[in-house]
Image (cartoon, rainbow, N blue to C red; front, side, top):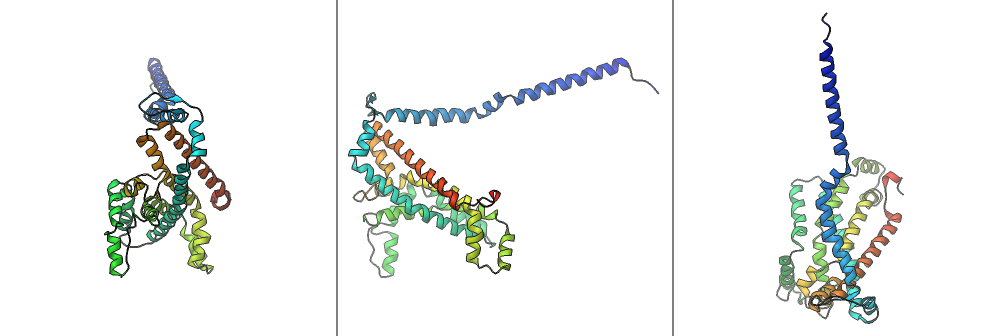
Length: 321
């Protein structure tokens, strides 16, 4: 049997060591954190330039008298003092916004959950139904839909025409202080598609075996919903609740286009008040202070939701606690 050549063995060893060295060098190169930061650099640049820097700049402006036309003048806590002790419109707009959040968020989540339960059934053409139901959420925040909504609830709008057929005399829902806020709430509730899709995804994760076992034990549909569906869906409910609460506090487009804060300031949202202070009154410093107060209020409500979640959110991995 022919013995291998010694030079051939050395050559193979050199090649093997060279390949191992290159592989080791390549592994070290890709394990370096620099590569990760390079991939993250577009997001990091956007975060620092378009989010963090404007936030810090607005925090500085909140302690100044700044009109956009002149250099900012440092006034310390004067903006906050004026806001809390001499600005009645601050409290009125905050009250209207809180009322809007407290009513619209539960109604929107209940509607979204009901539609998600319906779409979770095994029916034909369910994908078409899902698309049609989700469509309002895609176009609902547009200016065109806001204008359409204003015409729909106007004196000669479709709503009053339908009521007239039933022999009911309608009113100008947008111009009536008692119903104007209700039309905005109805528009927001109509845009339940995003919450519905999240609920539907959560429902898909619940095992059908749990319902089968409950049915064998004689549990009704209502008992199954409150004992199985709702507890297992509670983390998704928490997620939706936080998202919708934050979004409702920042509601602006609908109030600006449909009612412009009227009639008699019955729909004068906090974000609308902030906008008018900044770009109509040229009080950018005061508007920045309003923005930071709104941020703190949203943070407090979000924290309260998370603190209360210990009592009603069920985590299966933690044994239901």
